[in-house]
Length: 144
Image (cartoon, rainbow, N blue to C red; front, side, top):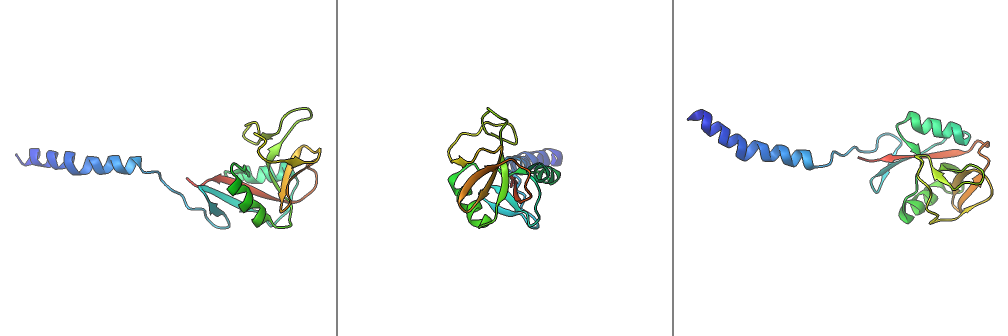
């Protein structure tokens, strides 16, 4: 009888609690120098590197050069970048479309000026370069 009561309590109380816990997304706060904005963590470097070395740094941190998915993200990044130039995760091969570092083709919802193959952002917008200059960079990763 006691065993039956314990089983009923288990079914009524504990199992629903486990189900609720498993359905709730596990959040990870942005740590250290990372800034959390709209479900993403961003890292603004203080160092400078070329585009390829910047991408390698981001990968070493479990992130990518920044993907800019919304106008709100763009406004935040431009404000935070200020007058400094920062590499972001867009590049292209000659004669091809712009792609994000994860291989997704860029849907041109913002303009990229210049004829280079690697994109950078500053307060004026997004521009392109050949990728050889050493400038700051922005990494991004999901906050969850």
